[in-house]
Length: 112
Length: 113
Image 1 (cartoon, rainbow over the protein chains, first blue to last red):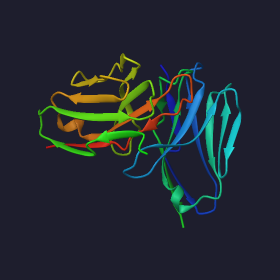
Image 2: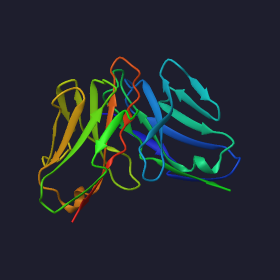
Image 3: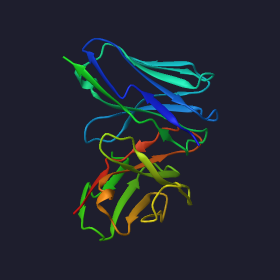
Image 4: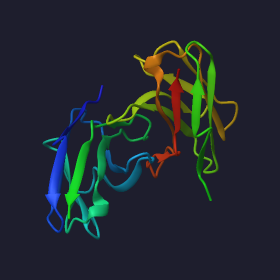
């Protein structure tokens, strides 16, 4: 089955700096890769996702890149703000979206 | 305009006393999931329904059961809760054929005394 690894497990950045979180997956059949943000005590919320037919996707300060050959994808947050502090989970899923496998999460702290 | 609703938000049960958590959705999604999440960990998939087809994860304990009486509702039954079952239980939905995003409910925090 699919296995998703995520690094780093914790990340601290100064406000205004960029943050990068990386994930690798094992199943070449996976072709949907979402990123979820979870604030303390709240539900995971989708912040950006990418399909395997796209190499990069951007939404304001957030971007995701995918290297399908190497089976890795990354989340990039620019101009970080304190409200970006949360746990971020990557995930990989096959084409019909049934089989989601989450990475272990990255706790991002943005220091003012 | 809540889309995935979970009740109750907080549940306290006694060791060994059966408990049922509920989830409903207004999205008409055909896939519903139950996850267990312990603090600082990723959500762990317990099972999911693809339409009426039940899919159990291999390592989900027999203590956990689920029912989906119709498209909108899904229940998680914990037959004999142990202290190790204390966690946040998240329900999520998605639609096959896209978009594939999973929509999460707010979760039910289960405490076992």
